[in-house]
Length: 197
Image 1: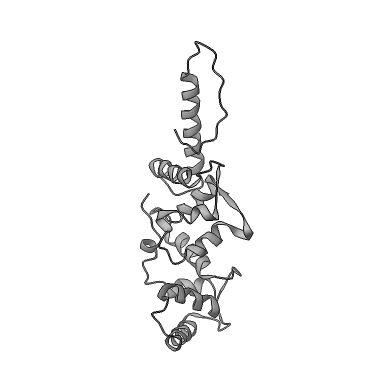
Image 2 (image 1 turned 90 degrees about the horizontal axis):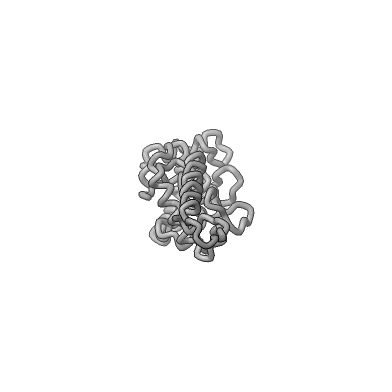
């Protein structure tokens, strides 16, 4: 029985069987799994695991998780882009997300998510100012996030210049999705954006 499944308490009459309540819970769980399968790239077993992860994060059992609670997710703990993942999961200063929204976010990290889905998510991660395109400044922030202090500023500027020259097809100073896809073509994006559940 999933802790996160919010169900009204049932009043029992003396001598009444508790079996129907158990059946109702099981039916609600099966319905919840089916609903989540419609929005996420997961098997039944993985959805069960996603629900368990969500319930663990939802310590106050509100039926939603906050930004602070998602920072406790072990699968993201050491991800240098966690701040961007959270920004994408919680758009426009949203304070919390539901199980359905959490499952949609996590489905990007499923082995069954397509390369295209993963590329589009990575593109959003690199688009630091969320304007729908990657500027030189967005790219600078992303590279600094990856390399931290291991690259001096002069070399970083050389890398940025080379990437923009090679990838910015129309020379407008921005990478659109197609430009970005070419830059990461040889990258194992599927491996980097896959989590075992």
